[in-house]
Amino acid sequence: MRLKIVQVGEPALRVAARALEPQEIPTAEIQQLIAYMRETMRDAPGVGLAAPQVGISLQLAVIEDAEEYLKLVSSADLAERERSPVPFHVLINPRITYASEQKVEFFEGCLSLSGFSAVVPRARSVKVECLDELGQPREIEACGWYARILQHEIDHLRGNLYIDRMHSRTFSSLENFGRFWRSKSIGEILAESAKNETAAG
Image: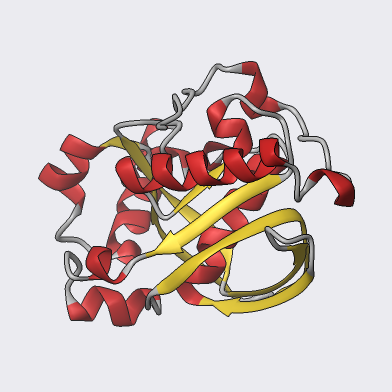
């Protein structure tokens, strides 16, 4: 069953989600929700989906950066983003216990802000503690694009969206991203947006 992905303005996207109790995790209700979220994420398609994005305020997210998605990205972009396949897994009650001081900036989108993108700074590497779909403790160390996905989904569970962290002058429709920004480096884009901001001031 595919769930409806709610869009920005939905109250569930702007409140801190409730942590799941360990005894809730193996219940049929939560296991069914995980299955539905997995199907919804793949159908979108996306690389992550948090429960608040389907209107359910629980600290639960699913992640998968499938091999087939990477085939659509140039090898140069994959290398620059440090992006490689990530198998399907579940995050329950996650918390970031370490985030590197080194930041990386790339365009980022969201299934709950359909049709838009912006440059977002994120920590290059993170360490996350969470429970898996069986309620077992798990520690994840990630860098590059995987670290970005983790930070994005955990933000959702705190009531935050990428627009809270973005360089606001890079916010663009996907159509205009393709027309004006795709061929430029992040450095060029940030320099141009800073120049335009100065001129506007």
